[in-house]
Structures are given as C-alpha cells and as structure tokens.
Image 1 (cartoon, chains in turn green, orange):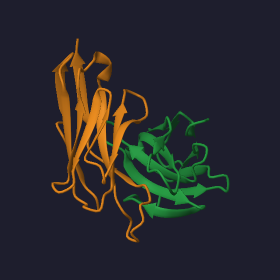
Image 2 (cartoon, one colour):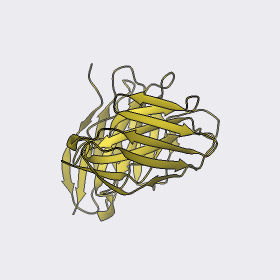
Image 3 (cartoon, rainbow over the protein chains, first blue to last red):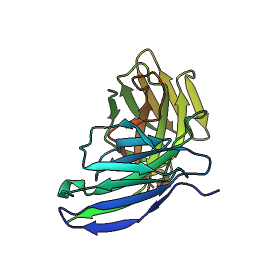
Image 4 (cartoon, rainbow over the protein chains, first blue to last red):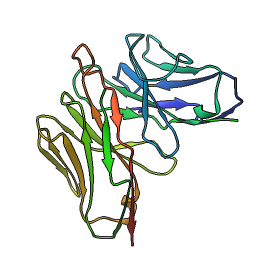
Length: 113
Length: 117
C-alpha cells in the first residue's frame, strides 16, 4: 500500500520563475492538502482540494495555485517565485469521511536563489 | 481562525527521564489533536493523536492528555531514549465555516527535544 508520494524531492529555482510540485495521495484517500514549512517553523496550511476543487485556503497569495485530477493526485503551482518561498512543501492526504488521520508525504525541498 | 501555542521551544533531558510538551488552542470547536515527530530533513510523522471525546490516550511510552475546558493538550514521553531526539509538533483540527471538519491542521511552533545518553 503506497503512502503519499511527492515529486520532485529537491529543486532549485531562480527568483521570478514558476514551479510545479506533484503529489499522489495514499490509496483510498480523496482529499489532498498542501503545507509550506519554512526552516525552523511548523507547517502552514496553503490549501485543500477535494473533488477537483479548492475547498479551503490558508493565508497565501494568489501566486500559489493548485489542481486536483480525477485520480485524486494534485499539483501545487507557485508563480513569480520569491526568496521567501524557499521551504519544504508537504502534501498531506486523508479520506474525506471517517477517520481524521492525515498522512504526509516526504516533501519537496524548494530553494529559490 | 485557530491558533496553537506550544511550549517549551526546546527541551533537554537525560536518557530515562520523562519529557512533557504542552499546547493550547483557541478554537473550542477543534475536535482532533495529533502530535507529529519530525527528524532532521524528514517529513512529520504521526506518533499519537486524540479526539475531543477522549481525555487521555496511551501508546507504549507515549501518552497524550486533553483538557477541553482549558483548551490545552499535552504530550508525555516516558523513559526517553536518544532516538526520541527530534522536533515535535502539536496540531489542532477545527471546523470550517460550514461546520464540517475538512482536515486543515493548525500547527504549534515546535519543540526541539534532545535526549542525552
């Protein structure tokens, strides 16, 4: 039973560029959330996708956008990258109903130079 | 929105001692409280969780207590071992504006636990 998988694991981008991160949820999970974890801080909620729509959003600018596909996999897109976007981006999946347990992927380390 | 405060920010103990980390939350509607352990360069891993209808839960050397009235919950690790050294995060999951629990977690700031051999 595969857990939450994310790609790429590490990447370096230049200020102003755009990046796309990908996530495949744990088998049986239909809800995907994205979190940003800056160095030395706790994860911060970016947004959540369910049934291919953004259902809930945290305090992040419109430069952060996402998508969910019919197979429940998801993408996080960040435009016009800033140095402050350097962080670990975590994907979390959970079933929409039933148990509350939320599982995290290994994350994508983004460095903006 | 929900706000979670976590203390202490750093905790140093000797192997075999107990460690306690405390968190408070602001939203009385929050109903799920997980604890995550994060080792350097790794993802947060769920170590224990508690739901709002339970006051205490134990799993071997780890226990969590919840006081809904005071809106605080605590992680207790007994007989600590060097491999317990990591950053620990508490989190709370509340309800959306529509009253449905959608799974958004609000995290505390983290506690760096160091267990000295």
